[in-house]
Image (cartoon, rainbow, N blue to C red; front, side, top):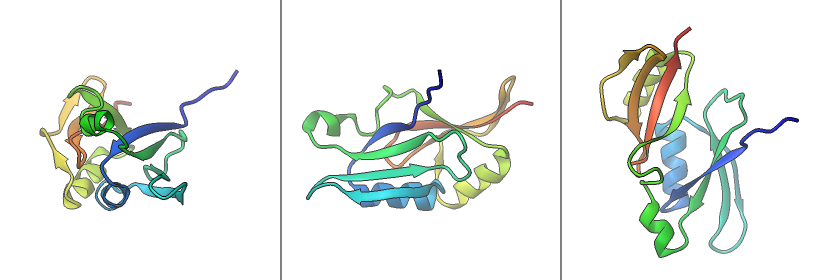
Length: 131
């Protein structure tokens, strides 16, 4: 048996602002932007060189309940983990593109890590695993 998580839905305010942030600031690649109806699009982004196949599906919040969850999809905890093969290269590049890091990088037994927040406040780890 073979299974994998193909996409994770991320609630966003507006498609275009989310695409701009994830492609220009976070450095992701736009995989697809297909109009499904007048107010719904199928928008997928992924980190460069992503070989795991996991993508973000940028989903515009369509209800009051969904809008209330934008930026807090994990109750304030780190929600997503962006692995890298070169922490310092990506940390500096992301900082240079305006990504807001919540802390200074630190060395842990499992690797080099720093928490960052996307434009909505969702918390991420930028993480290079220890060898």
